[in-house]
Length: 323
Ligand SMILES: NC(=O)c1ccc[n+]([C@@H]2O[C@H](COP(=O)([O-])OP(=O)(O)OC[C@H]3O[C@@H](n4cnc5c(N)ncnc54)[C@H](OP(=O)(O)O)[C@@H]3O)[C@@H](O)[C@H]2O)c1
Image (cartoon, rainbow, N blue to C red; front, side, top):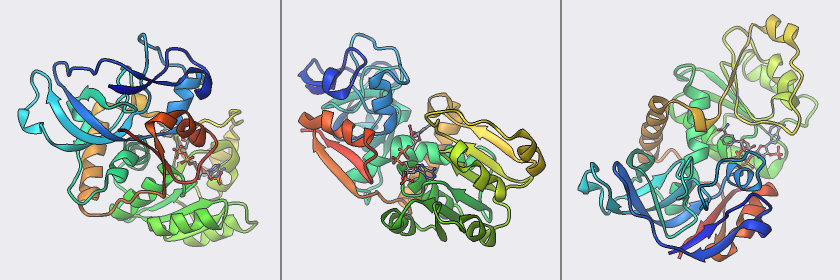
């Protein structure tokens, strides 16, 4: 099969190649997916670059997310799954067989049926971003009737945080850096979109909700002052990204707000929670409540350029077309 492969850490141009390799067979409890589209996330280039190194078992096919059709099942998997159109999550976590290839094998629960109305692009956009967004929103209970602030609402995780929070009944405010991203966040359904670079950003958020219930955060250091300005005893600030330099925590201000801080890394989220996330995402998908960001497509032969685009902070979703 044609597969993007790396054997060492380095820049995309240095280590990432498209090769012909033997397709994998599904082991017990696994399914094999004929991949149509492979979605690229920041974690993919961070793993490949060695910034957040993950052990390489001889070779590594990158990318966790994808859309495709199950064409083989391993022992113990219901053969009724054959022919199912699925979206994948965490395909390359602790395994060689990421989605930047014609076939991927992964545990059956990580290949989730894609409802008929959902596009292949949407299916390939969900895994890492929507699962992370779900965990950030729901780790501390339901959000129905609650006020949620999503930092960076035009980003991939931010986009699904807005859509999932709205679908499950929250009021949602979000921050962006300019008009193009504001439009994306509005289209996702945010009730209030604030440019975090404007001087009155805090006032706009305070008039929406003096104290948020959840703050889905990706730049804790940069935004902590703004976050604490809308925090109180019921607020959970849930951080899912590291900044280039770790912030210094203003402990007294955090104590004064009586705020709760939570950190999330999808690789370590308990299985029960990821199963709940997959089920909730499926429900929202079936209801037509999830959409894809504008898609930037690359053929598999240009997988290096695809990863470079994500590394450069592309606006929208970078997708690799698998032949
Ligand atoms: N913990 C986990 O399991 C997990 C899971 C998924 C992703 N992540 C990490 O989360 C980060 C985002 O991932 P992604 O896929 O959503 O990336 P993305 O699609 O590139 O989105 C990032 C967004 O954040 C915005 N942003 C940057 N600084 C901001 C600030 N100070 N305040 C508000 N918004 C800000 C960016 O826009 P502007 O710069 O224009 O504001 C951009 O829209 C990455 O570092 C990724 O590695 C972690």
